[in-house]
Amino acid sequence: MSTTVITPSSGAAEWSLPYKGHVGMLSLIIAESAIFTIFVVAYLFYIGKSLSGPTPKQILELPVFATVCLLSSSLTIHFAVGALRKAGLAAFRLWWFVTFVLGAIFLVATAREWHHFIYDEDFTISTNLFGTTYYSLVGLHAFHVTVGLIGLLLVLLLALSGRVKQEHTRNVDTFAMYWHFVDAVWVVVFTVVYIIGR
Image (tube, rainbow, N blue to C red; front, top):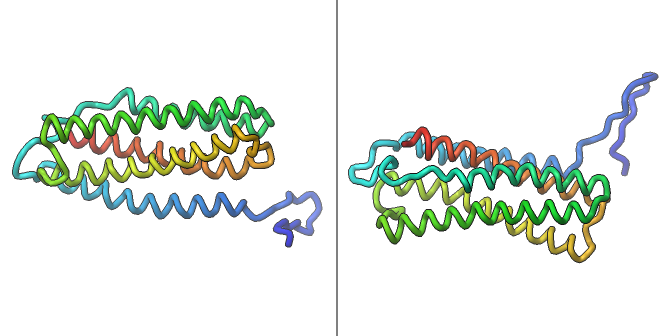
């Protein structure tokens, strides 16, 4: 069944229904944005209301390197999709791999930060209100990064086995939308937790 509709007037542009993959991903992003909004509002509401320490100012350090890596991965995945669109399979695999590595570096940096908090600072999710909201919000984002990395790895393995070709560009671009969302959310989380929250 065709999804293309052509208007009868002469010279009118052809119109077609949007790609269902993009619509589905956009719907997911909207739903996930609502969830993140709830967690961000909760974090902002409870800032400064902990009855015991540590406070954000005492414990948080700006994760500049990790942030640069994650935000750069939005650029590299854009390059990857662009390369696939032009049938540059080798360039696609390279940029996709770089995207995976940058995302993995970010996740490792988050894990190291948590390890330091838990084992060196004795700061856990149950320490105080700050701990509860911090681990909940940053952990929610880390979960989404983990899901994204799994997706990146699966596509990379398929690409290395020769199963990703130019005709799969729309599918790959749909997944890239998710990764851009993860990066955009981190801008909000970084601003709220590491700048406003301190």
